[in-house]
Length: 449
Picture 1 (cartoon, rainbow, N blue to C red):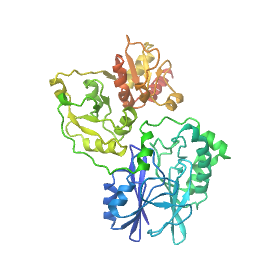
Picture 2: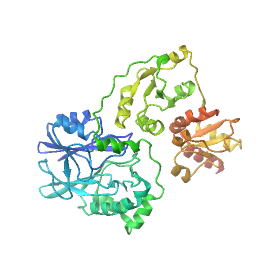
Picture 3: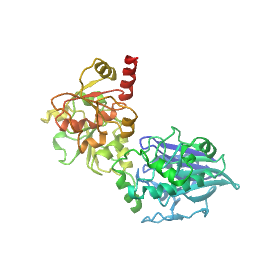
Picture 4: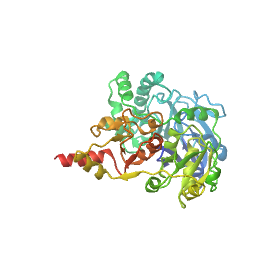
């Protein structure tokens, strides 16, 4: 048996291809299914099953499309309630016709219908695909369907992770959610493990009872992106296949009034001059995640890019989360200026600059835009705080518009994310990049020592 892992790092998720004895199964495929289809062809196997562990809340599923393209059976939990044809998976009822024995285990908690899939060869348990149930060093969060259900689902999750922990120690553990996924309550930096290793190291298996587990899991959960609210309904109704558009160069003078500009150029280029109101999301594997948090769902998007940047990859990222309205691309900002548009800009400084100024006693106005958990773990004394995605709704009280605001986060990325909203409020900003608060605190501690 071979298991191939496909990491989608921007979402913190993994898809798996299991192959054995000429057959194969894909577990929890993302919407861009061509990569999985190619892998099946390269492996020379007959894909018999596409397995979904649950109704996903962090991306649009590619399961239905992959099953249609390959002729495989699409399997979902029996209680999923989807509006399209599928083979329902029932607790401990082996699936027919697979390359190995595939045994569903009902593991509710992350979602009510959640199924894990245990793999047996010649009667021996060899692996389990645990979706959003037992994760590496953690467990799937239980609050994505609303705070009113989070406690009950957390207690179910306690039962589920212990059900999985009862599998043989050597069982390979292959979760869908991992480090970087907002679906995980926390993470351990690895994507796969074994049951035995998790029994020794995973703190969620050390709680004495369901109540203690629920209290621990729900304490300190970090915010998750706004676009999550739209993923479940799309996946229940039946996602459409992903089509990555050929992005034409657009005339800046003819942009639709409702188009949202997402500038994926390098940070230095954005700081030096950008179209007012555009989001500064330097090209990375999380462009769409942040845009999906900040923009109304499925807004028409126009990318601002440099020649040679992979705009198709950016559009693919948007498609993974249901943003199918990427209209095209503006290359650079010269065309915008030629059409009569003005540019906005701001200064950037280093963490050393900020630390030196603070150590010298300069009265700086500092805004920390990291997550609540990061803020609570340690911050610059006297700094204002607002998590970057929340700047679009309101700014921290007390910011003085007559003074510069030094904006900092952990790496500089989120400081750029928030810059559009600070500029719109008329603030003069200095963005600290690269690095952020931890670097500043380390430098200050060295000065004090």
